[in-house]
Length: 84
Image (cartoon, rainbow, N blue to C red):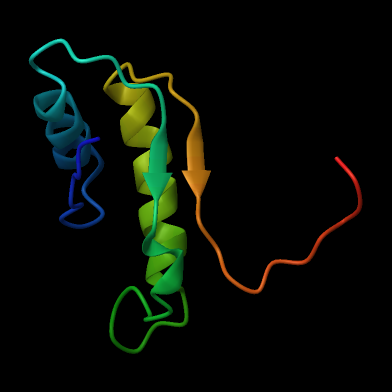
């Protein structure tokens, strides 16, 4: 398990951070994204939540970094839609 702390919504910098985190050749079997608990706006005076911007950045950066592992976004207050 490795913890990588995202440093903002810069797609290129995030992709490089992800590449650096697996530079030793470690296999990525999954990505767990916990930012869904942060309900702050992305920028002061904007209504767009930071979680939306950073989730989109992470998805794009994972692709840019060539990481095809499953991405799990942890949420709270989720509602079941029935049996899966």
